[in-house]
Length: 134
Image 1: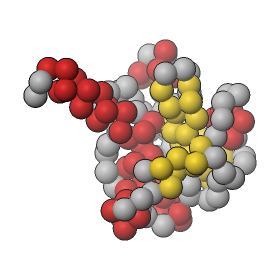
Image 2: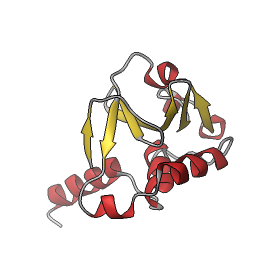
Image 3: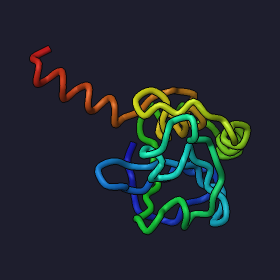
């Protein structure tokens, strides 16, 4: 997936940089971004973090906005914007946050591709494998 700075449209996956990681959400409008927690939520107790809807400024919390551009196989598997937003809205209020196994990136990938994945975690695992020589 490639990330670019542009104005998002309905159903886009968006992200903003927060310290050493990115926070992800589904863009519906300037008034509605659906996300799993807020950018500073990893500091909260996991049971307090829920899928919620905020405006785009609350999502960004002063950061820059990037929009996902699916590439290659991702372009073939990405759901329609209507499906992405419908699935995201169905999960409003859902909990079960886990920074390693069920975070904001997992949430957007589930909604957009039907895949419970996190590139951040895949990158960390790959770096560990290289350091360990495996």
